[in-house]
Length: 117
Image (cartoon, rainbow, N blue to C red; front, side, top):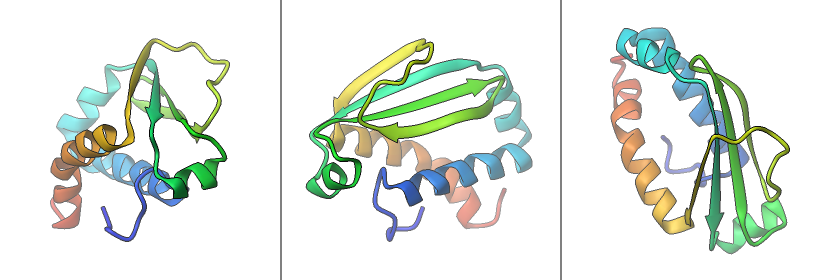
């Protein structure tokens, strides 16, 4: 993922969606794994940097993802918990979420970056 994209910015979310779609289109193993999941995931992020507080107008960020058999049906970021069925909730600091998420995506993105997907 480009260093120019700010983690959790709207542009970053669009890029994440593009990478997931590319992986599903070109990696059979990833596609099979993803097809097995239908879930509503909520991630509550504390201590975001000031730029994100200003962007989303809040001190905490909420990311909601709805997967339906591996297809992203909804991907939102804001400050309010959505009125959706939530199956799993994670709460952590911005620094921890960024470190975990970017480390996990290096594998997928590395394949995309070098043209293996």
